[in-house]
Every structure is written in structure tokens, then in C-alpha cells.
Length: 136
Image (cartoon, helix red, strand yellow):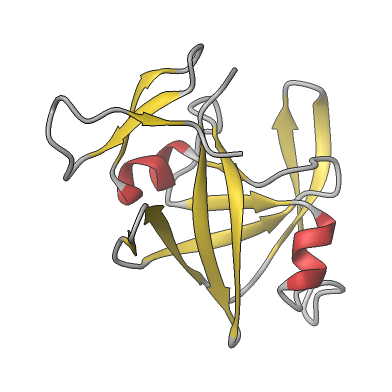
């Protein structure tokens, strides 16, 4: 199992609520969210109007990724509410099948992983005894 959370992603006037994988191995300098092509289509980001192509070093090797110029507003679903928005870079990765949350975005959203193996986490504003289960 792994930790997945529900996010609301808004960019260029479009918003989507989706599940995303908390990936502590996705290291970034600032908050980043990697998204697959189908989600990029849903958000109106594919094909991109301005193409910024970079190479990303992944566990599977080096792959081309597409950086979106505009920053997105991302918030975390906490049962009855969403957290405050966090500005983040959107990276379109055609080789993934679900959104991946970078280490910097994990911190900015206040996600505290209790157990990756059991899919358990809590939000920084939660009481210490509050444990949340991974989203599907």
C-alpha cells in the first residue's frame, strides 16, 4: 500500500479533484505536482501553448517532461473541507498514470506520513491521535 490523498487542482480557470500519490522520493526545489496526460487534458493543459521541455531523472531512467508556465493552486481534502491553496509548478509526465506529489508540496500541504506501508497519514493541523487512511 502507499499514501494517496485527495487534491483539488486549479489552473487557468479549471479545477479538478483527484487522488494523488504522496512520493517522498520525488525531490524538488519548490512545490511540484507531476500529472499524467489524461489529467493535463482535463485541466486544458495539453497540448501546451508554450512548451518548456526538460529531462527528468526517474527510477526508470531519463524521461522528457513538460513544465507549465503558470502555477497551479492546489489544496488538500480533509473530510469536510479543503486546506488553504498552495501555489505549485505543474509538470506533465506522459509516463505516469497518476499524479505524484513532490517532497516540497508534501510539506507545503501539511501532510505527515505515519506509515507508507499501511497508507496512514495525518494533517499538520490534526490532533496527534488522528490517523487518516489513504484515499483511492
